[in-house]
Image (cartoon, rainbow, N blue to C red; front, top):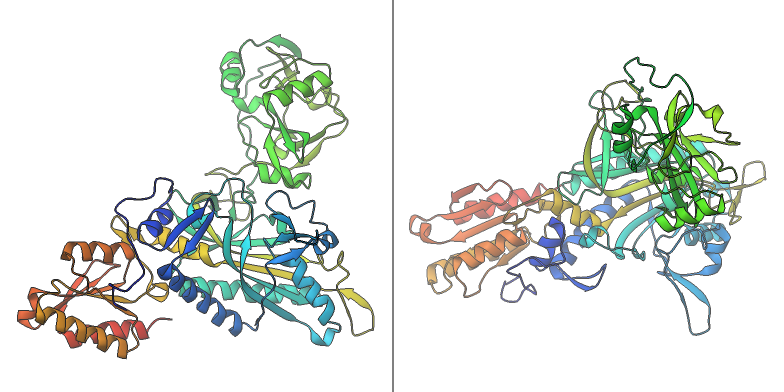
Length: 578
């Protein structure tokens, strides 16, 4: 490809709405252009990257025994009603009508469709196990699309679904897919960590995410891990050994009483006013989950993890209650308290979820639903709560104790690029997707689900591989392997040598660009670094010595080689791609 013909336009500045490295660089280097919030055009350079990732995915999925198909992007409401997800999925599901007023949706995922396919086709245990996958566009109507391709509304995804006769078969395929994913991301040049995670809207009993570890702002999730054992988990799933409350042995409140605590709206203010550690305070928070108020109780030195809380009540949408909603709740219960003075007393009839840290609290401080007043020396038995559901709703913190080996946990940022789920019979049972077993009995398939974000993987690669000058693509997924840059297109020797190197690289199977533009050398070098060509061959002054310069983008190393050796060097590197 000649640079003068390549459909690419680099920008001098980063887009004003770009927040993270991958969004900034992919837009500036001419890979993507925004059409509307959360929806992007994939320009030729980007499409080449995506097709290479897809090729790796296909090869490894096929090697693992999966079979590719393609399912419709538009799906009928009826299938989603069968599974029970039409109302439960939430506003991320884009709903629409066709000209005949049939209600449809744009597929954010394909569990319902694939289950219907299996229901119509897989009738006997003799046809199982089966793993079917596709690479398809998806659409999720994100409330706040951001981070470019990392949290867009339309994206490309590989999703696979396995069908087995029992849990043992699912376990085997789950491990098969986990190993396959490790190979895929390794070939893409990404260092990933497999972590325990929340199943979210997909559902299922067990799930893991494959996270690209990064220190950039694009890391969406905290990943907690142990250096002593293999434990690692996303923050919304991580657990740790129950932290002990340290109260220095003092008897702070010898009796239970209600006292004035003016202007103590925060835990810090209350702790300072009473001169007590925050471990002696029972914190009560009001959340709105699926439009209903829920009280969350937790020891005040700890933080509620909202996904855990939402899952504790089988919710779909969660947010903290507003001041107006708290006021309405208090009024309905006959109180007048504002946030900071809320407590569980008198709140029977509401769903009350208490973290496990609450179980052993004694002689603590708690709000009593009266502004500027708290009860001290309280115990749970004093509060008259009819029903408390104890769950782990605590956000793990750095330094907490590993639940498996007892060593301290560490935390880092991660970008999710893949996930695997044990669905079990979550979809097959309600959709009556059954097979006949060896005894002639009808049984539901035991299913698994396995996703890889194709476009997310490309963006994550940029987050993991870049410098101040631009993208540093791993060789296996780079749009082109090399660029040949004559310093001056008006110099006959430089141009003829560059053209010969370009032609020889093409003959050797190297994907290469010849920068034949009549531009200053500095402009060409900057574009080469920004776009991220893994190798750059420059024909310049060193030609008088019979040498060209070969720059390795990843290391910044420049080698002086003969034109023939430069071609051989790059050809060998390309042939060694996994």
